[in-house]
Length: 54
Image 1 (spheres, rainbow, N blue to C red):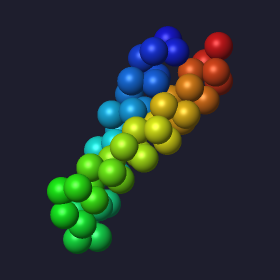
Image 2 (cartoon, helix red, strand yellow; image 1 turned 90 degrees about the horizontal axis):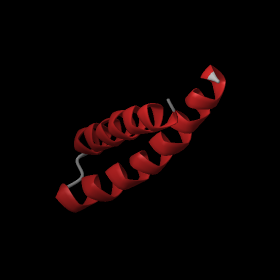
Image 3 (tube, rainbow, N blue to C red; image 1 turned 120 degrees about the horizontal axis):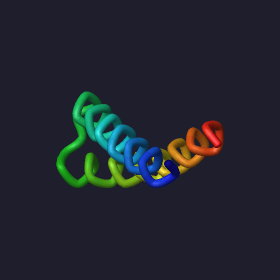
Image 4 (cartoon, helix red, strand yellow; image 1 turned 60 degrees about the horizontal axis):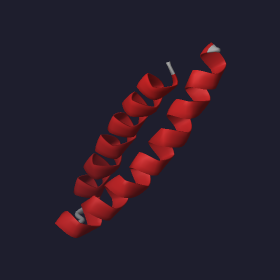
């Protein structure tokens, strides 16, 4: 369950960060960096959700 929640959180937050970067008018590299930050946040959020289900 941990890996599934972390995977889902990573995908969701990474895409969301990329989308917000596009809205803000960032170019490819800015969106790429923001997506990386979103992935890190997604790992943490997914891990916290998995801990709640245990």
